[in-house]
Length: 84
Image 1 (tube, helix red, strand yellow):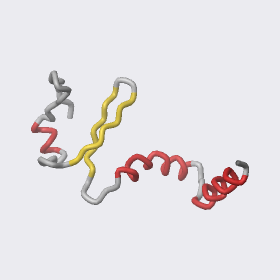
Image 2 (cartoon, one colour):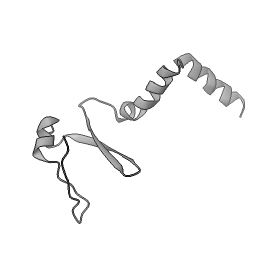
Image 3 (cartoon, helix red, strand yellow):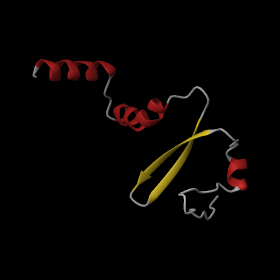
Image 4 (spheres, helix red, strand yellow):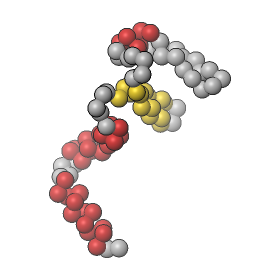
């Protein structure tokens, strides 16, 4: 679904009703905004969901892809601390 939005003089945008309905967005829901170059992505933050978990998701996926374990990370952190 693609919708055209306009930015107000106060920097506000209205999320079209069709998009709100599609994502089941309600008044008071929290959204997180990601910006990269000329792309803006809004993501709904579910109740009880941690923003830190949302932000670290790409890192966890990359670690899984590279077969990096928690033990590997712990050992790397310990090694880095010893070298300082």
